[in-house]
Amino acid sequence: MRMKSIKWSLMLGMIAGLVSCGVDMPKETQSSFETMTVKKSDIELPYKFSARMKGQNDVTVTPQVSGQLMKICVAEGQQVKQGQTLFVIDSRNAQLELEAAQANLQAALAQENSAKLEYESNKNLFEKKIVSSYLLSNSENSYKQAQASVAQARAAVNRAKVNLGFCTITASVSGVIGEIPVRTGDQVSPMTQLTMLSGNTTMYAEFSVTEALVESMVKEGVKAAEVEKYLANLPPATFIMKNGTEYPHQGRVISLTGVVNSATGSLTAKVSFPNPDGHLYSGIQGTVVMNFAEKDVMLVPQNAVVRLQDKSQVYKVQADSTATAVEVTTEDTGNGKDFIITSGLNVGDKIVTTGANNVTEGQKVLFPEEVKSEK
Image (cartoon, rainbow, N blue to C red; front, side, top):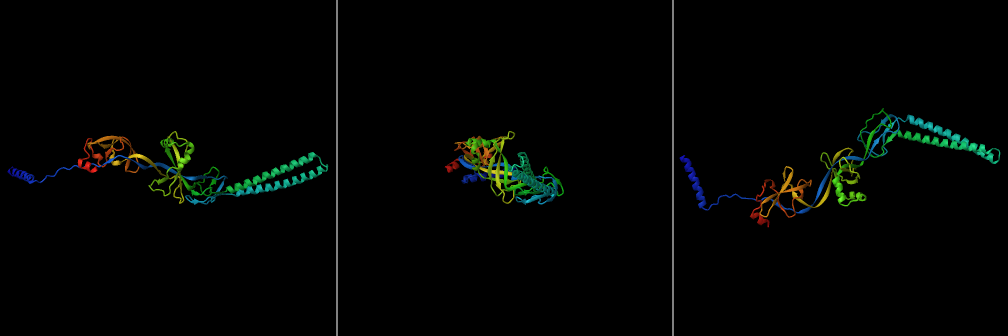
């Protein structure tokens, strides 16, 4: 006990000696929080829409005649050009039908020639008053009937040629071959789907546009007749694939349906993307991003906004340098740094930014030295 008393006496003596010698003891220092003055500025906001790609001309390839599939000339995923042969169907029956039609045409031509000779002969005899007008009329009608038979026979030949041509199926557009569910030797008919040909030189990204965006168009005074002009002035679009890769070519909005979907309350928009390298395919999903300019908005950094359950608040610096919590409504800018304040603050208000999460109601956040230095 005596030793402890001696130690305490020594410590108190040292402290008294330091004070008597004029040595200052360490003082607790207070530091200000970072603040900013609210003002209005312009910003570009990225609007994002979930989209699905579709070829400019997605064509379902089906045969127009029935028969056995003799040859498949392409492979799934192959790039083809317009007019390139895709499938070949057994053409023997079509060839026989063409030959029969051509034979019928020859017979009809011969019949027409005979009817013509008889009509011309009776016409000369009638002029010489050797035959009656009745006989002349009958021969004339026979000649006209023979001419009609020739026309029918020619039509049959043309139809047979068309059917023969249908046995070779070609690409109606340039694009990419989809899945081929049939195999060589299958019996096919006009009801059989051979493949899907996606015309991919230009691709369309289709997505839903909210009714709110349409209402904004109305507020801007866009009339129905001016929608095309409005779409042409919209900012370019970027396509982000599911893996986060950004497609290198930008697109433009080319259409907006005129009817709101009653179930979803949205319209369908279409963005056209060039596809020179064939990197886009029908059916792939991703995100269409368009940057729209917003003018005269109040921007604050995200660290200035404190989340309390379903409410957002900022700390407003009062004249006496104390902080007061103010409830605000915000809109996300999408840039990961700022919020737009839509209500709760006014231009010129000073708010706490860095450290806002550590501020308590009524706490002093600026001190004389800092206030003076700010001025």
